[in-house]
View 1 (cartoon, one colour):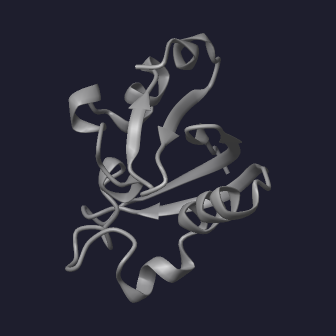
View 2 (tube, one colour):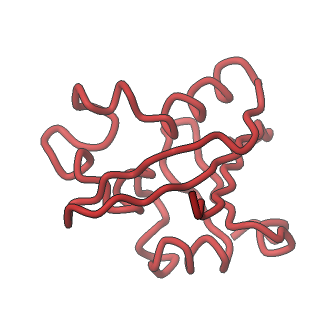
Length: 121
């Protein structure tokens, strides 16, 4: 894991250009309720148990994924370098529950840093 991730105060994921998690800090693992081995190499939707990620052909490849706030912001940051701050995101989970988050993205040399903030609203 990149050492800098654990120096961050927020839950942080490092995503590669394939939009799969390369790593996550301890706070991110706590927010996702997953071990690092269950995060590395997985698309964001799988990490947060998105209902649409469970459908064939998988995370980012269904019609519903076109409206995913997380995917849209991460892809934009990869393509343009544009950061996004505290963007509302809603994850519809496979168990029927919903999880509201706020996300922030930053372009790094080796990917995109995605920070996740639980949203009380």
